[in-house]
Length: 232
Ligand SMILES: Nc1ncnc2c1ncn2[C@@H]1O[C@H](COP(=O)(O)OP(=O)(O)OP(=O)(O)O)[C@@H](O)[C@H]1O
Ligand SMILES: [Mg+2]
Image 1 (tube, rainbow, N blue to C red):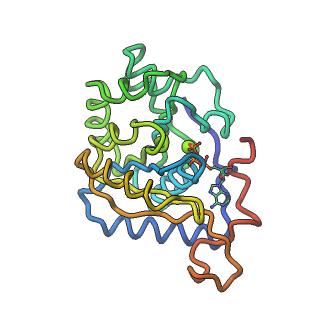
Image 2 (cartoon, rainbow, N blue to C red):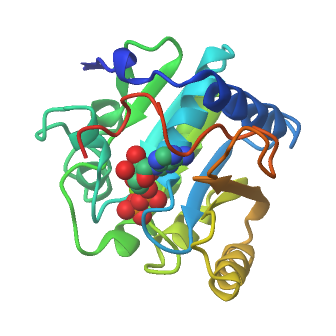
């Protein structure tokens, strides 16, 4: 199946530059860092946006990329991209209802493939901890240069730590002025305990006035953020 969403990935110049920087930093983490999980401490910090745009930025750099929506409890990707709700996804595969081939969707963005969550399931951490998930990651490593995995917040549910066990690195997304230092530290510890390397953090939703403290790095929080996420 082929997914059509290119017209929704339209970022303003500064945001686009920020993702290119993130991509460069990731590339310099080493060629053994190819399966990456994104999480945060609390909901709504921007994981899904950052994960998807990072996957897109890597694909634009001619890397073969798989974006995996592993937020099985509550996927927003299907809604955001107007994908058919019947599309088979991760939960179907992990519960043995379909094959790997059935859940990897090509897209109209060159080099970018997607695995959606599938039907929401309450026992997501058990599903993600099973042998099917291990096999899926091992097989996807063979097929793609990068696998970018979007997970729920680790301050709320354990899923991201379970996923991190199979990953080479983790990125923590932090929403400016919202995250508690204590919770972020706890999230960091949990990821480390899963044996996953912390690659760094993305400070998201930085409100900029053009000369703000990140020097225009992350673009404006308000203003034209493209129409991505408009349907949420
Ligand atoms: N840099 C940004 N500037 C403006 N809006 C943003 C930015 N990043 C994310 N958002 C908006 O914030 C909301 C939450 O984003 P997103 O769904 O990516 O968060 P999340 O961390 O994945 O949430 P959840 O924990 O529910 O999975 C969305 O409406 C999204 O469009
Ligand atoms: Mg999300």
